[in-house]
Length: 424
Ligand code: CMC
Image (cartoon, rainbow, N blue to C red):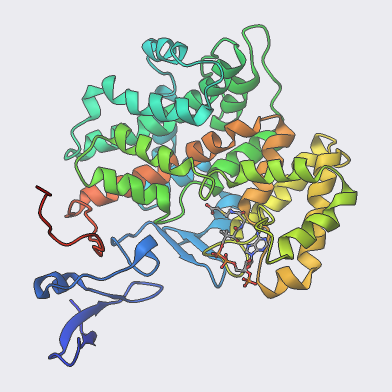
């Protein structure tokens, strides 16, 4: 399989040959699996330079600002495709032809409703529950309802489960919101597009249905599309790890939702809004920029910088344009909060500190602004991220189960007490 080799010598020992594999694009990997037989483990907390799997789904080059799904650049997908087509692409590896596209759309439409018992399940949550707490619980609970798609070794079951979860997530996300504000749940309207339907389930009531403009529908669809996958991020790796034990797909996605909840992952868009509120008005921007640059102050400009993208986040470039369209359509360019956001962006982009460190606004900076402008409360932001990320989770889970895989079981560097006897 591999011609290239790395050699490892430990304390003058005979060299150990380690095969090197080449990806189709991107860095090579050294296969260290044989080291365990020599009594050695590798050490890489946070998986900073460890590839835990092979994948053909998504490629990121953070230095060049590139994000490809199945080879297609995210900018082209955002411009020419839509969320459902990207779901199909992630799951199946190729873009659908017209027949496949129609079939997939119908499958999704057919599965948007949730069992009526789920409505009862929601009633058990306090109205004050965080939407992510509810989402985590109800998605895990889906495994109690859909026994016909739980055979993880059957590719048809896996496909059915993927379609079910992708279809039901917008419904469940909207239910999390409706429960919190004490309004009746809205049934999905299958005559609408996925994005229109989502806005309808969020803001509609049995007495009234919102008018969803093409700009808002496009913004919501693009937000979902831009979040659809991001290779082996923390939540996707969590889904893979849970899936490697043979867990059912609903439980695996619930574990992904739990991992996404943290502020270091899916919670950043919420943090952007909190920061904008804290800044309050134009006159305080300079003060916050100084705070962000002060090494003795832990404050960071939320929505700026990225662990992987050290050039620009290609998703941010797409979403910036949409952000402007949404603010213009809703006549919110002069809203004090958005004025602060736009001024902050301008100042930071011209500031030496941010330029030198390649700290560009990331996708979360703009997604928070768009969601807020549409009227979505900040506590629902991560739920919307989860709804968009679901096809990525399912595609990775399906890919792993389609190949030979091992239970995920990291090693450790033990630094505790050596064996000792119990006193007395
Ligand atoms: N504001 C001010 N300074 C910053 C910021 C920021 N937002 N981000 C990084 N820096 C500085 C940092 O202090 C350091 O400076 P120096 O070299 O003088 O010590 C330098 O830039 C490099 O920072 P780092 O911490 O080594 O960079 P990292 O790659 O570990 O961190 C990050 C990436 C995203 C955690 C960080 O940029 C950050 O905290 N940003 C704000 C939070 C945020 O917006 N997160 C959302 C990321 S997108 C989510 C997703 O894709 O899932």
